[in-house]
Amino acid sequence: MSTQQQWLFPNWPGLPGTVGVLSTTRRGGVSPAPYDDGMGRGGLNLGTHVGDQPHNVARNRAILREMLPGDPAWLSQVHGTAVANLADVGPQQVPDADASVSTIPGKVCVIMTADCLPVLFCDREGKTVAAAHAGWRGLASGVLEKTVAAMREAGAGEVMAWMGPAIGAYQFEVGPDVRQAFLDGAIDESGVRHVEAAFSLIEGKPGKYLCDIYGLARYLLHRTGVKEVHGGEFCTVSNSGRFYSYRRDGVTGRQATLIWIK
Image (cartoon, rainbow, N blue to C red):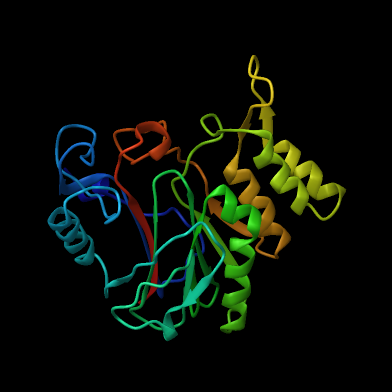
């Protein structure tokens, strides 16, 4: 297996040379089924909370660590909107948060997912970076906006973003409660139009919609002043040979999306 197959290196035009980015896949680790690589070989499951043996996860995290300048600052993700500033997080701390921000070289922001949307941020000067975990609840509650606000509070200039592997628009089936949660957050008619465009009724399933989580994230990012947004071309559910997917498999592993200042 080539390095290119094992790792996903974001296609992010304009990314400063002082910033490192990486997204893992399910390939290249040691975990057995159902945490394997989808082809009968060891999987790179990085989640300690999904039923995989701790020694497998430890080995997988060691494989990832070889690609990084420091240990990732793992979070206890709770589908909320809290943002941890890594300047305030000790080496052994695991904050209850769904985003992190850093201005310190070598401090690695990391998000784990298996269908939820990971979003990486940096400013154009490459002096401030962040990563956010955006499931639909966190997205509707403002996790992206709060991450951008934390970056600006830390001194960030113009912010840009990259959206990593998540459930695609043709796979994410939701009920009317999810649609309404975003409509409730639309602040004007333009916002309502953007939200409505991200949901399409499923024929033969009254009250069921397909949801474009990438489209919703773009709208929310643009609304908060992040005009340059890249990524959004992946679907974790559809690509069983590359990504873990909770929606597809139930019991499964977790991949990670990471950013740091070099």
